[in-house]
Amino acid sequence: MDIPKFTFWCNNDFGPDDEREVRLLKEAIGERRLLMFAEGDESEAATNALRTAHVAFGYPTPAAALQSEKLRWIQLNSAGYTTYDHDHIKRQLVERGIALTNSSAVYDEPCAQHLLAMITSLARQLPAALDSQRGSKGWEMARLRKASPLLNEQTVLMLGFGAIARRLVELLQPLHMNLIAVRRKVKGDEPIRVTSISDVDDLLPLADHVVNILPANEQTKNFLNSTRLSSLKPGAIVYNIGRGVTLDQEALRNELESGRLAGAYLDVTDPEPLPPGHPLWTTRNCYITPHSGGGHSNEKERQVKHFLENLRRFERGEELMNRVL
Image 1 (cartoon, one colour):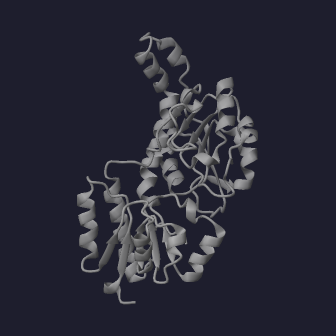
Image 2: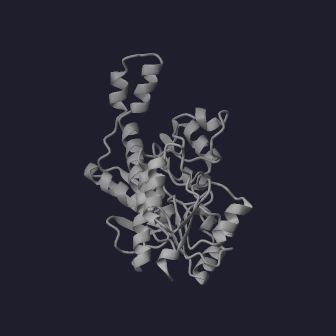
Image 3: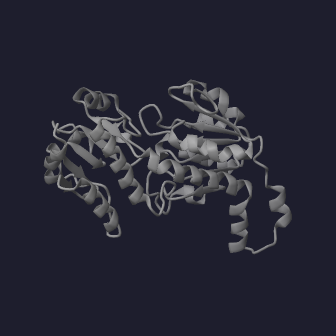
């Protein structure tokens, strides 16, 4: 295929403050055709334009992407690819020779740092100290010191072992914690103990911290259900930075309200945004961030640069980064 005649389609969610990033994208594409649409634009014009494109950057719907006979590569601007994670869709993409990549390399660092902050802040009783500062302003030194465990030798069980988990391992290793993970396919090159996800029920009772990084698909819906949550040891903590639907939130609420689990940090919920009146907001020892775990100040710049590096590889026939299919 004649590279200079590539047509690019983009619906990345650029905002009014992202002019520099848009300019970076346009300058790299140069004289080649670039068709830009707003995030979530499913109009006839956007769909028809995608049919003429060879490369898509952003998040086209699978249905629209599969209508294109020219499309050769889709670069998602997210780490997640839930709507593409279905056997019939993946099969059609493979049959049509359409490569699918995501942006895990953009989000592994911020998500891992977010998880590190979640784990260490609760161990050091920072939320409790903040509650005291904003409330009674009592000098609760003795209580907070007594309630602050050292993380050394505690066990972290990670559900999923992709880019985020690998970076989290690097951040946690200096704390000398016992790190274990489960995943669908064990590759054998993992730097910690990683076993099949079928072993999860044997490992959950051993965990002091359960870090859920699972994607949303047919196999992971309510993966952390009431039975699995009840198998956790008293005082365990649950973290969810994957997808809200992978966790039974009502069962989690029951465990937290009973005091059996020490806490939960949720960066993702079901639904999103979480309505102001939702009971999770006021659940005992439940701490919520608004799906901000992957966010960072130069997020758009890193998305574009990641795409452009993959474009360079694509044009040269080299291996693509973060390839899903």
